[in-house]
Image (cartoon, rainbow, N blue to C red; front, side, top):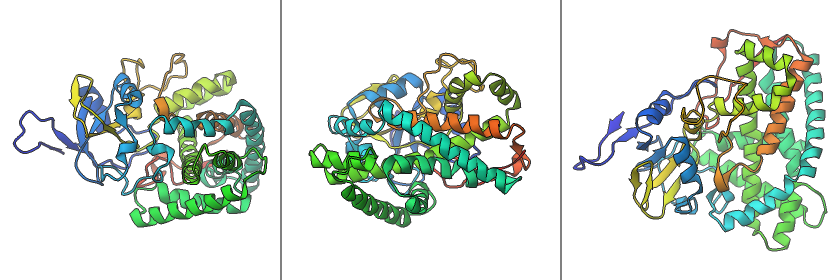
Length: 406
């Protein structure tokens, strides 16, 4: 649906973007059309008010992501048109920060993702995965990978990073699912976010001076040396816990589904295991892992993007999904190609808000895909592809269940 502002014949059209529930690999046809026909345009989403600009081409997306004239901080408190009825980050969290505050917060998080910490987490990830696959083997075929592997694996990993005890992880899963869903409703989502915030306030409080290498302890030390306020530390913890558990759960499930439904690619990967890191990067580029868009930015002055002037005060979204399908950067972008040696995808974002947990997400994906087919070389879907159910009203796409046999 397209509307035009009254009395403004030269004003760009406003497209209403209903954002359909799509399967894991189905690219939104509306987004595809905008990329090729209207790459800098105005849209209205199901929630919030007014319209926002949507930028879809690769170079334009990168430009908006790094230019300081587009502010995340200015978004807070405005009822900007959006997919979810609520904002995912807490007020004052890193998601709503601009440099230099954003830089200060990111430096703290980087301590928890040091090379030494990642080596330790890789070893722990393999141990966790082996244990989960033991459970799958004991369960027997058919088995639901979402229940037995893709949900518990990233939850265990981010909780280990954070310092969340095993017994509290079901709470984390429930809160994250509620917060990240567009269908749970604003009140339920805000209540879950407040509950998670109180939990991390207590966990960080218990972590002062412990000398541990968990992210909760790192955040506590940063509060002690006044690098962060307690509110900022809690906001960081909530955002990383949600992203680490929910996004990787669905992304990894979509990767498994992609390989199960692309047998030639799977056979190639099994014959050439050294291709795994490159294959994971291509899966990250190819899979449209989210519905619609993430957080917007606000233009703080008139800025030209792709030949279009975006007025000061207007909200702007970038689509990393369309950037990853831009034919000017990725030849044959709609084809899954494990030989794509040059692959500067932006699946983890770009610029200051690039995902701080990207290295851990890659480690988890590589271990999951390698371990799954090493243990179960005959792994295949247990139901016809068309019978799979996909999550509805989700911000990050993924299957509800992923039944497999072997």
